[in-house]
Image (cartoon, helix red, strand yellow):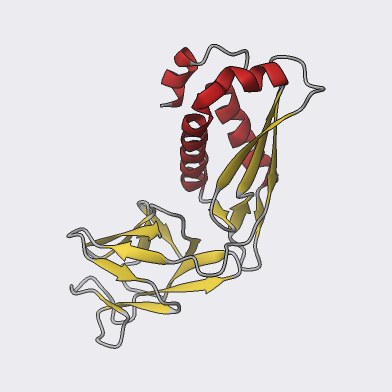
Length: 204
């Protein structure tokens, strides 16, 4: 996606350059929340020279969507979480020479009222109401059948930074995006695997 855009936008600052700078910023600004989960800034500001900014014209929204996807993918591949919904704004700095692009980031809490759901492999949509137990027992908020699912397998919890999932000492473990976890900050589009069940996290 971004690589293709680099051929479309005839500007000194290519989308691929901006994407690399965003990934470097996330790596540099990574820190840990009070639970020890790695988190990165969720509000990014991309500053261009006036000429470079103008060259993007009506394509800014396309670039924004692609860069949000880049940041989400980079965070997910490195196990980073965000403190709230990810947003990217563009700015113009009159003192910048053509070809210069700077990225800055801020930590912003998730707005109250944001909701998330779990989507099962057969399309069932389950609202998350924290704390949310997942397991084989009938007292779980999300009941998952199967001998490889523990009675109380995992729990989704919330703090000021959003949602995270905790494995409750299950026999067969809990995975997020194919990686076994003890506790893990959840991002939009994460895949939680418990036994034979795959649950996709969606922020609505």
